Length: 347
Ligand SMILES: [Zn+2]
Image 1 (spheres, rainbow, N blue to C red):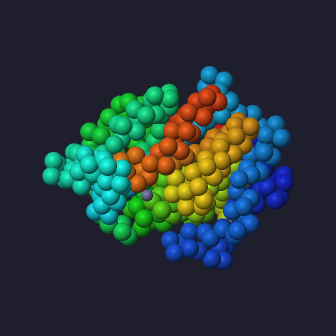
Image 2 (spheres, rainbow, N blue to C red; image 1 turned 135 degrees about the vertical axis):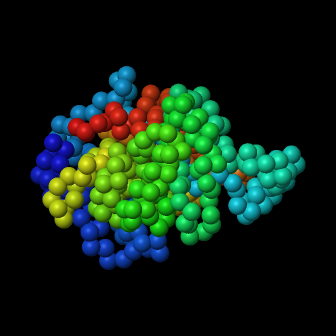
Image 3 (cartoon, rainbow, N blue to C red; image 1 turned 90 degrees about the horizontal axis):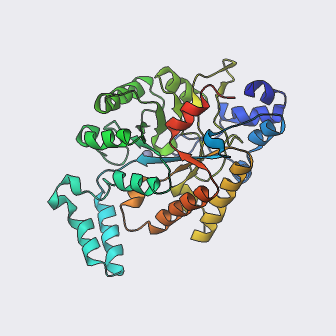
């Protein structure tokens, strides 16, 4: 029904399907679609979702909540690289926190388990205190353009703890795998072997994504949903949607059997494009308010390292502000998996 409605307005349909991404004029250094300034400016207006709501789409959430916040974490690092250790340590020293500085520099001597980035329980505790849950996406490949990240086999009990508590373990697809069906399947299996259950959710490292091929590859690999589709150098709604949706393949003229829960705010890109904490918060609040007014779902990505280092305190503060603000507004704050199970085949 959603597609039939969208097709009735050509401009909206072109926006929803991201038609212009089928023949990109330019890609960035990571092979991602390069957005024009204009579409980035327009990204804070969910035009397609607004059109659907104005034309009779109805959305419901558990316990009559009015909107949802999908909380997610890409686990890029489990062990801080030397540059992070140094930065964190210097930050601690500046505030005369000598113990903190030592912890950041010397954790390795106490053992891998003491890594400040093995902070997944701490993140869950913070979310639980606001009645929220989230998704953690883990890397399951050795290939990476910057450095070797980690072996998921080494953190098996952490994955199980996440799953046992009712949070989600998903796959953070490798940098080189986003256009490689065999590599994606291999990573999924590796993660499932450690976790002992099926993995439903996906997001690619560096948000590498090709419309519509990436959706086809993920659907074929058996993923239930993806949450890669967003802006890597800004924030907002990539195809004018602030609701999960079934993507459409214009080349094959058919729907793709996967749910997209579009990414709206990523920590790195939010702060890279904001002049101050206040501006970053205002932009986030604005996106939350628009989403709430349309009974939508807003997806946030906060990397786990943010909560373990000492040089991103502002980013943690903003995350806590989001949790407080959204719980005050009565939002359903949960994982991608729960959104997927609730949304099902869509409206
Ligand atoms: Zn990543």
